[in-house]
Length: 186
Image (cartoon, rainbow, N blue to C red; front, side, top):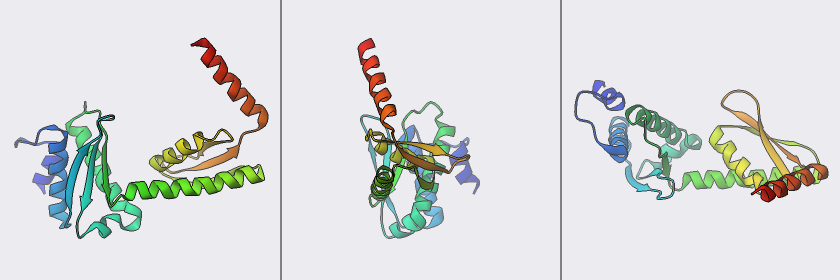
């Protein structure tokens, strides 16, 4: 076990160099210790410098069970270990399996669309269940594209609810005026 913790927090032994080397070593050791039958493929996003790791193999179902909790845990583990070993690294590390992340985002967007319709038809606020930050970000970005509604996170702690509410006409007029003022100042 000391070897595993040494890989995470650094040891006197030679450690892999670079982001991909460290991530691969961490994940290979985690796969070995957990006896998961998975292979990994790495890719870099040229625009954001994000490192994307995609898993395939016989144990995909286990990795994705319970709404991808094991996948999320592995991602958090790898990110924290890399932050410790490479504090100046600016790219993000994303783990995925069988396009799980995109499917989850699509489901969130579909639910946000449904709740937006309810808010607009009733003219009242509606609330989305408590979500972690990464899921709230997906919903807020999607709803920001529609000028008829606004959204904001409500609550304390890591998991917060999302309030979706229609914009009143005078508020929409003020938003448009602010946009014109900003454009005029440029």
